[in-house]
Image (cartoon, rainbow, N blue to C red; front, side):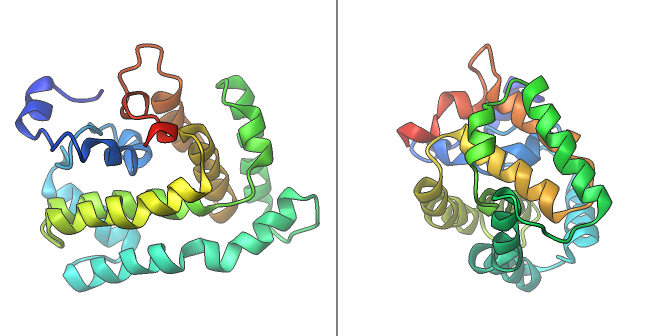
Length: 217
């Protein structure tokens, strides 16, 4: 997906670790790069711009600090309570644009044939933090801000246990990510929805999510 076989073969990962590459895959797919390797097929200059412009990450210290924030605080700490109230039908102050994106997401979930039950029952934005954590770890190791072993540690020992305790399937994880993104950011939800759709509604069963179902990990 989005990559030639030579790149994936050249950067093949330990089969025992490959299943953890499902984390960060939404955002990599949004950027149209392969998900099956820890190596990121983007120019280092492009990665550095993303990290600096969107996250104020430009060195090892800022990278580790941001990863730690996402792992232990993130938006779960300051927005999860309000999100739960919103899902339970209580009034929650939010901008009109965020209301619009949440409404669009409900429509998109039906049009893209997502599991609407998973969307309706979701009560956490945790996957929004976890997905960004995994994505940033993968970008960070590519430009040398952290080591590849440190990036694997983030996916295997930080993201995976939290995700496994909160979500049974990638569908649940994907709905949590999308709802968290729509609730926390005044931004177009469509790119994220397309990323989840590409991984989830995979008729050829070739996506990283299809190869390594979360329920089997």
